[in-house]
Length: 146
Image (cartoon, rainbow, N blue to C red; front, side):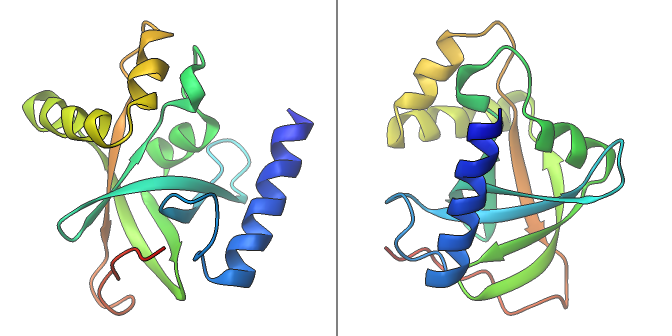
């Protein structure tokens, strides 16, 4: 786990230094949640998918049996902070379910087939989380540009 923490720290530093432009070749944001148990802020670099003005993050945990820690944090405290490009803003996280989730999952797998591989490794349904910017917290969510 220390290796993953070190990797994330380097990725966060690179994201902030380049405003997210050249990191990993995928659309990336920084999600800051409040720790479910600790109450301390926790920042995690995550790939995201755009859905109109919403941002979607995927709690695949690379196909691990358990949900990622950040998922438990936002379930306990759904108001989060997002860093996207040069913008930082508050957002509200909500887990998608039912037909809305199923439809979006198909789109995500079409765009990024490795998520189907992650799902195939686990019996849990990988959660999709919508991040919607809270009014008055920053300019409109910018489009991703590589």
